[in-house]
Length: 127
Image (cartoon, rainbow, N blue to C red):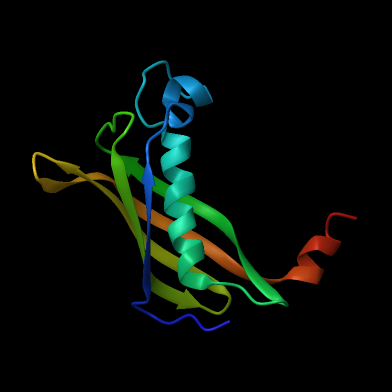
């Protein structure tokens, strides 16, 4: 698995009714739920890492500030950049932006940590 400092990836998602705080139980408003934002930010980190037949990555820590509401229909761009590599631990700076009034507005930002694991070894822990 080839991961290097500064490597980046982004994913773009459109907020759907099923992504709202009311739909996922993290609140009662019809805006993007924080758990969904976290999943989208993690998806950007996964896009950076890729995977092989033998190795993949798993999330180990998330620290994110959700700073702006996103209405249903809003396009949200979630980006991740490799900030640190310590052995098999990879730390990412992440951010989410959305278009607002013709400019990109920050919707969320933070840090996500993932660990590189051997698939078979990791799944054997389920036994």
